[in-house]
Length: 143
Image: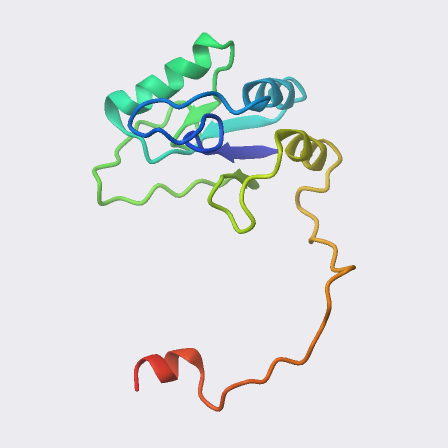
């Protein structure tokens, strides 16, 4: 599986542009997933020296990414601030996703068990009829 992982707030606590304190078990989990055959890509807004600092931080802790802000290691970074970087990862691990960042133990279990791509169980969610407005949100916004 190809897994894209954010750096700030995901591998380390937020302290951008500095490097924050390590998030417990992040590097260890990434090492284990990589050892199990997953390709881990660093997916970060960091560029230039700040990006190098993040890559070096992980390398110094014994973890090297398959690729950095690209789909393959041999891709050269052409990001000029205007070009979007679209990755073809199957899973994205980011603290800014809906619901926040799960514990790294949960992340590992979801990927290792093959459940990372499964829908979230709906049991325990109370279903209720939600009244719908006569106009859609966009119609109200632009009228």
